[in-house]
Image (cartoon, rainbow, N blue to C red):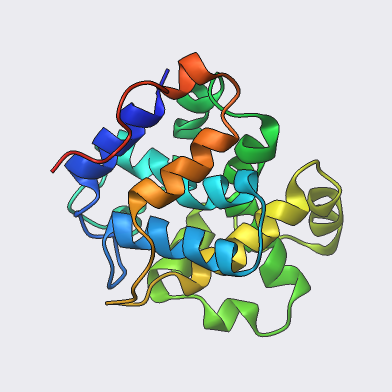
Amino acid sequence: MLSLSDIALLFARHGAEQYTGEPVTQLEHALQTAHLAEQSDADDELVTACLLHDLGHLLNDQGRNDTPTLHGIDDMHQYIALPTLRSLFSNAVLDAIKLHVDAKRYLCQAVPGYHGRLSEDSQRSLTLQGGVFDAAQAQAFIALPGAHRAVMLRQWDDLAKQPGLRTPSLAHFLARAERCALTPARSGRGASITPPA
């Protein structure tokens, strides 16, 4: 199980790696997604989900320093982080992380022109992730608990690929994550959550 200090360490170790197929790093993408949510007055749980939605990439060596979609790999990153975060956050955080990939499949069906706005890598991964939902699948998806929040996360995720965009720091967003952590002991409270230098 991860603490907030562990999460800070993961970003310190792997956050400078390229967000595969995109012009930003893993950390830049996480911060930009959380920043967009914060600018939209999202609550602590949704901002935290935005920060951590791709944490599975940092926990998974598959495709590190490469682009998995070019090799036909879906790294299932939306599920990898969930077991490590389950004792730290409620479903208000976890469901948005779990469903953010299917939210892309939903938006491709529900929003005209959405598919065409996806980056090249995101279009490749869409195929590997099962493709565009049909109408019945889209209806079933949006009825799931947390689906509407996952759709919001997904839309900020799509925009969070801007080189050089200034955002608040990781420490700023980890402080918001600490506010919605389930218990102080599990959050690493009392230990520094400032990313190592």
